[in-house]
Length: 302
Image 1 (tube, rainbow, N blue to C red):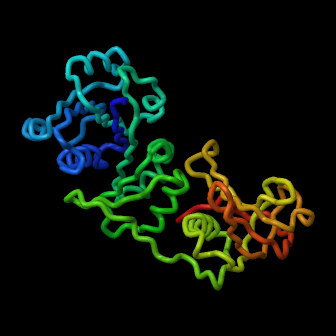
Image 2 (image 1 turned 180 degrees about the vertical axis):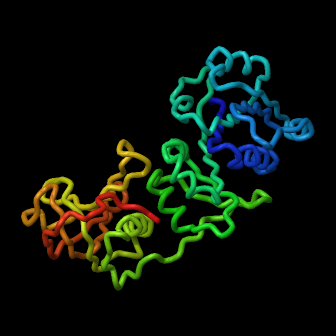
Image 3 (image 1 turned 90 degrees about the vertical axis):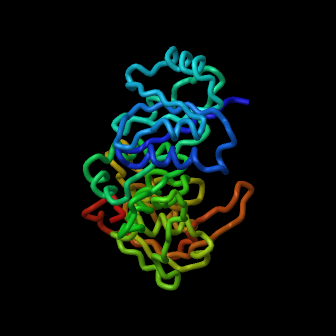
């Protein structure tokens, strides 16, 4: 069996070191395995000798530019660990390391992105490409310093960057909690404004049973056709034009009344159908009225 690498990413002082230390101190995770921590970024938190001895761990501080497969092999031969934890540099693109072919029968087991929730809005506004790089590759997103956080804003922006990764809250004791989710829309009154389309889309795909058979009205443009169906929706610009995410739904029964590239006010009913690969979400269309292109074509989650 390949030895696991646990990859921790996020900005400087986002809680990577603290999260690694709490993980290795957790008796549910550690049963005497030898761990090598490769730290490609130094923050305020350190791995002291007492911690390393208690958790059967060793740490190596390396500049990213110097970390290649030859160095990897030497560290593996010297420490002979059962697993590795890599603390990544928050100002690099994670793919520079994740897409490498690791030697010595190692493989990435999990990618954990830590985020200081109190600074999330600032990072999205000013360092969006780096935030997207970190979140989009994560298999888990961990939020800390979340007091007074806008959980709706956090959830919907993170889910736009990575729809599949679970989002967890971590308090200062290391206890994990599910992200609280309140009801955003009333299924009995789904007249969705342009400003709310992004929030609505993310909520309906996350909570499909809640919206089953609900009547809905929304604006979107016909992106393409698939067979007898129209694909209708909007685009969300996560960080730049190269990272636009399509937020679209299949609309049945209205294809002949619509043209690709034009905007429409859609009325229909949300349907859910079981299929071999899970469930199919679509809109059973009732009416499509052509409208003018909105002033702001890209949706947001503020």
